[in-house]
Length: 263
Ligand SMILES: Nc1nc2c(c(=O)[nH]1)N1CN2[C@@H]2O[C@H](COP(=O)(O)OP(=O)(O)OC[C@H]3O[C@@H]1[C@H](O)[C@@H]3O)[C@@H](O)[C@H]2O
Image (tube, rainbow, N blue to C red):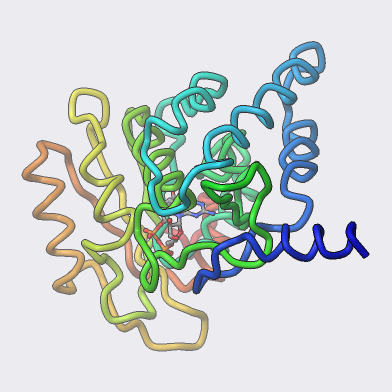
């Protein structure tokens, strides 16, 4: 009975938040994804154990509404978010299409195609100040509880670093099937656009892609894209835009650019 009561009291110690709890088996998933990523075999054992520990230590035993970028600095020191010039792909409201793109064009990289983005994608994590356990019951919701939670701060930080490291011609896949393909409040609009380095990035190429069989709701001449064009040109970066693509045609043309219907 004592063990039962202690266990019960222990699990009820966690705060009740409005967001879903930490992903089950979080630590094992982080380690396994690290091993799966194309890390050089001789490095991966040492590095993956360290990455798992540094990731956990960033948030465990801390108030989950007190996250800061500094909490992640030991983890950021272990990974590199740099990709080759002309190979960076940002996205906004087009996650699946952007990943289909980089699956077809393996030399292109979304944040998800870097080690840290690949490890963290679709996971949720938080702890509690009064415990060294993860909270699997609930975690802060970025709107209903607090924006400085560990997941939101993580994605803003890695998105910022990913944008800072970009060079040459960078691309962004935007959703032409919603009214505002570009949204200043999105991570792309709030973080990545403002962290591109104009001395390294000379052009931002936007793709405004609409869903197959639907009329486009936004286009390169729409007000939201004109807003993006203005912001980018203010930053002394060239802006180009393509909008006569449905998602199917976009994937077909990135696979075979020489196809006559793709010019
Ligand atoms: N699993 C990933 N999540 C996120 C990435 C990312 O690369 N991977 N993010 C952000 N992000 C999280 O996704 C939603 C918003 O998406 P959504 O509203 O669809 O688009 P965002 O522009 O906010 O964010 C996409 C943009 O930021 C990076 C990625 O490099 C793209 O260029 C919000 O919770 C962000 O914190």
